[in-house]
Length: 346
Image 1 (tube, rainbow, N blue to C red):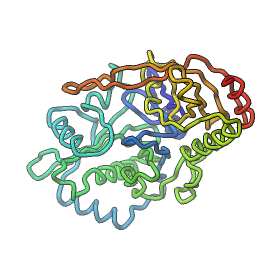
Image 2: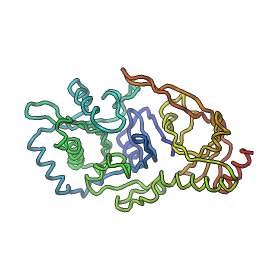
Image 3: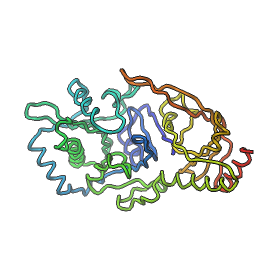
Image 4: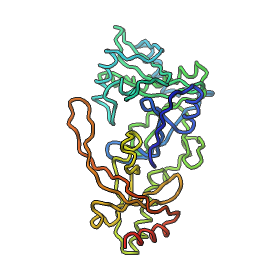
C-alpha cells in the first residue's frame, strides 16, 4: 500500500508511455504510484484510468459542451507557460476547490527540482476581451497524453471550463494520432474525481494482474482499501482468540517516507493494527498488510513528534510520526501472524 516514487534524471516520450501503462503518474518532477489516497481525512482506493483514443467518439453531452464553449471562447494549444495572469487565476481557483493543491504553479510543475524532464503543454481558454478564463496542462509522450490539472475562473463555474479543457485535451490527442489519454486516478465513493469517467469509454488498471479492463468490470467490493481492511479485520479476530487487544488505526503520515528522504525510516502504511496500545504506548507493536505481496508484517515502532512545513503565512502543524525501529516478522497467513504476535507480546 506504500506510495512509490521515482525521480528519473531524464525521461523520453516512449519512457513516459511505459510508465503510464504501468500506473505511474507525474507529481512535480517525479513519478508516483499508489493504491490509496487520503482525501479530506478519508482513506480512499485510488483506481488509475485511461481512455483509448483510436475509436473514441464524444458522447452527445460532451459534443454539446464543446460546441457551446467553442462559440463562447477561443482556445490555443502550446507549451505550458507560467505568468502573472495564470498565477492569479490559479490562486482564485485553488481557493474554491476541494483537496490539497500545490501553493503555486511553479511548485506544481517543479516542486523542489530545478530539472524539467516532461514535455508539458497547455490548453489556454480566452474570452472576447482576450482574458485567460481557464487553462489546463498535460504531458505528451510518444503515443500518450497525461492530463495534469484544469484551472478555471470560479465565477464561470457554470460553464464547466475545467471539464471543457479536458475534452479539448482529448480532442488534441485524437488530432495528434495519440493512442491513449490518461486522466489520472478516481476515488470510488468520492465524487470529486468522477468527472474523469465522463470523457468516454474509460478503462481501469487492475491491481493484481496489471491489465487494463473496461470500467464497468471494476469489482467495487474488492477495492484496495477494502482488501486491506478485510486482512486486518481477520487479524483482529485471530488475536482476540488469544485475548490480545488490537485495533485498526489510520496512519495519516504514510506518504511522508516516499517524498522526504530524511523520513524514509518512518511507517509507510495507511492502515495498521495497533497491538495492545496501552501497553506499548511509546514503542507501538504494529501489524501492516502488504497487498502487493499478500502478507502481514510485524513491526516495532517509536513514536515521534514533528512540525509540518507550511506555505508562507501558515502556522506549522504538529504531527505524529511512527519510526520503524525493527521488522520482527513476515507472515503469509493470519494464523502465523497470530502466533508471532503472541510470541512478541508475551
